[in-house]
Image (cartoon, rainbow over all chains, first blue to last red; front, side, top):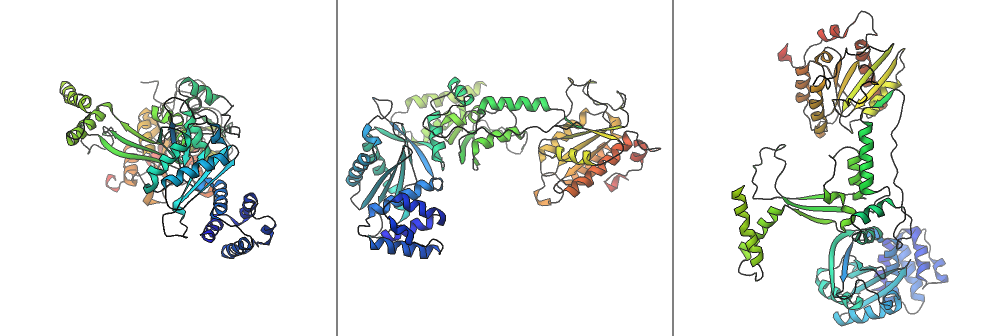
Length: 387
Length: 181
């Protein structure tokens, strides 16, 4: 299994990054020089395994460390989702044991062993004040490595948020339970925020607390969150070209639009988000464009709107800057950087009530606590007849 | 109503100058075209104004020179640009359509990406009695060709060509739809 894992690591890394990664691993000392990095990946893997076999004690733990370093290096290759840890009595988790990698590893290992009787490997490392964890839970036959069995966890000490890479559905409940026990929280909820850039994800998650005036203050300030070491990047401003013979009649309008956008998104570059998804269930409003669709104000028009790209929030800003959308933006797009989620449901108030009534009709006998909802749904047709 | 309509003869012309107004939705490449027109070496000076839609704002009415020629730019892959042109045309005096305006259809090369039908555009142009120029702005050559065509017409409408008036050009033109002949 160790051999398979080493091969997996080599295949994931770029050849020129392999040497620094092995040096950071620290398990091989002088032997790193013996590996010829100019050869093909298969030959590199073979020589790495050979070098490792010369030394005693290549355990799964040691290999796990290497895999974790590799993940730290290529963190954008993973899909991270943000989970919110909730505790009833305290606002945030402040256990000093949680910021010590060794203590955390011991705790996590014992919890994982309780829930998963099969073989498991736990590694914890700290990088720039961020705790990285790797949990390997064997699911296939013995001594067979499967990369899908590995879960990576990122935890910024003393925050409420924890980032998980993709995991198997079958281990979900136990995994979440064991993380809850380790972190000492009562509830771990998926906050529907996913992406590949973990720093941006955390920034987005933390910004959820700063809405309204706070958000305006934060956006206009050049100072950034103390958790993030990098200073904020000023976005490049596309300067309007001026020529003596060429004049733009709506320059004032353009300038006004840029000011409006600056107020809404701030002068800095936005956090990187790869995807923004809206589930829309509102009344159909494009009848003027497509008259063939009948207007039925009872039935919501269900659709899914996806924005995808390397940086979606910047993209939304640029759309307006190119004049491809009508300003001002609706509130849900304007406040995307403080919503703290990228899977959003949009519904009319009336449509929502109608949904509830539909659900209630089908599950009336199963639901015990729906009388309040039922009364609301019953009132809906009445208001409609009045209008 | 009268203030919002653009008229060709309500101002005095400038000496030895051609003023062209380019009207088109954002992202249609007005600036590239404008730069192409300016780059052509001619014995008179060329002024370009660009606007995303008409009517023009009344605030800088005073500083604006007389507009000799109007180009309406349609990007065939962009339905919005056609709509903008249809809306803008309403704010133009009819004398502009006697040889003092033209429509420019861009991105004609890739028919599969078209959002606006060519028939629709040519029908629209027949309706207003103005010529269409088909072209693209992808390469410098295409840009210059288009710019030269526009400038030739603009030159006539500014009165810089002896013995030729825009009305003469317009009366020698035929509609695109052959049934109208």
